[in-house]
Length: 296
Image (cartoon, rainbow, N blue to C red; front, side, top):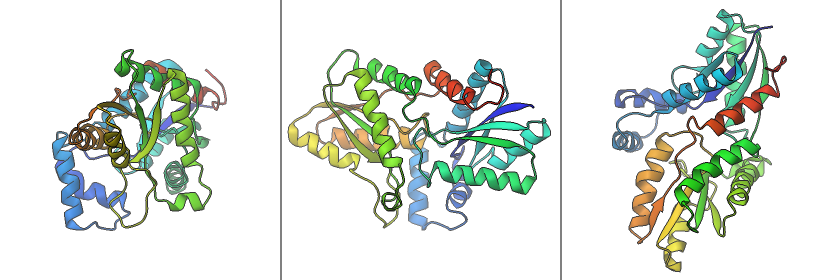
């Protein structure tokens, strides 16, 4: 048996010219209104015209490969390298069993579940004889919590500042289906807060979609408005639903929320993203080892 790990990620454009096709991929071929596309293009332009997501995920993969001693592949849902491409490479190299880890610690059928469905489809389409062990969630893994806590302590630097934890919002309809995403996102925040022994912390959802349906809240903006009313002058915003830099960090947090906070007299700081944090890579390694047929 030849084993491997498959890291699944969202995928993101690496140039402004790729944005139209990328958005069609995200939307399953359904076009967005031109003003929405232009707004998204503007956001990418402000962060340098590209996302570092692929490079960072591949860096995570190489670090994990070194630690585990088994091949680690990267498959993206919406951009290259696509999940199907990763499955084809794995099959060509004789992989017969892989542990699939979505680079999102909290499970939702609308996010992680969707990545898994795309992987199953790729297995059927390619006929690849690969058995997959699925990692649905690792939202309270001790090393994940320790990695987030380490980054948070560094930005707090001994100060007692209010911390606002965030995760990517999803449509509210996930709650009606009994989806566990909301509970897991809040549980990650609670675990990190306990590890750092925070005196005060809150939770909000960020990056709501540009659609008319209702999305999970409270929003970051509503929390910042409340902080202004209290007279707070400095806070830390700590995303615990993301494990690397991409547009939801580099634009939503570093530009949009930071400017929104500044307009209310608040200095907003954030921890460095996990990226290839050694603690985070160790967390991935432990999660993978639990499901490898012949642990290494």
